[in-house]
Length: 354
Ligand SMILES: Cc1ncc(COP(=O)(O)O)c(C=O)c1O
Image (cartoon, rainbow, N blue to C red; front, side, top):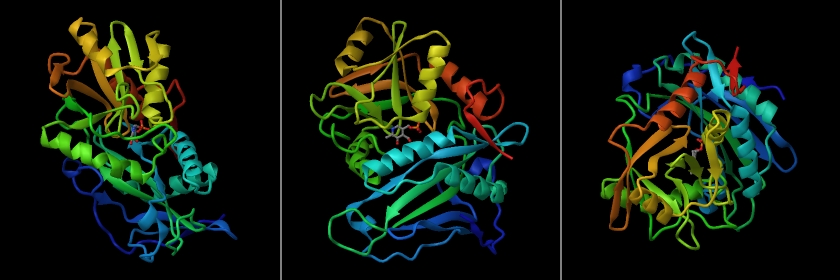
């Protein structure tokens, strides 16, 4: 399929790297294509970033049939543009699509479209270490229909946003709050898919956590309310003694690409790494026994986010001394060195945009 390009007439400039937050500054162009039962995916275009015209009856607004992805393009120290495991994001998007009755996309085609879009938007990629161009591929259901069923028509789009350094002031450990009253996902549901409703469902607990001064919610399983699942928009790792533990994927957790990367590096470095059930009691007991050494989240936005405090009802534990742990830092440095081209890409995770 040929991608039609319409150049934007605007000549906006990128804000200073130090003024960039997250997800506020959008670039001049976006990629769009449509799906219909007869034509499949068709009419791929790069067009000026602008509002869509979608009827209020479009199914996405009523029944939330929507999936998305989040990944980043980095400017390396020698001015190359690199993507980190982008095909894994599109594979995950296709898994989400299957789970939400949305048609599959052709990964090679959308990779080419993404590269073409980024080449056109090069000036929007910030250069300071830690900054990046955030990429948001999305698919929404567009049938103008109020009956409940899978839509027949869809819109796929990719928008880009220049984002600032997540850790402009260094990696400060965050405080997390274990949700007792709310759950994120149940087995047999859609927790493992990156679908909009999962984020809507998480808001009430995260608003409560924020009111209490906590940055993120730590989710427990929906049935026994005992086993740790994930934290906010991140997966989670615990260093207990010499064992690095992360919850196993049981269908309720988003399979993070950073999570897979941490597991691969841990194996490569000869660490004892387990993907297993981990109860909140085990974590609190390990803390009592002084074997809970580190806790950190993993995800595209922060890469690695050290955790300094966990609250579970009335019980609060502190982890570490207020500075990031050695293991969290080791993963953070290894991953960001690969992303910014400072270390050899020994795992073949980087896809450069020529
Ligand atoms: C709910 C949830 N869990 C985990 C992750 C981490 O996934 P990744 O490492 O692919 O960014 C994300 C972010 O995408 C998320 O939204």
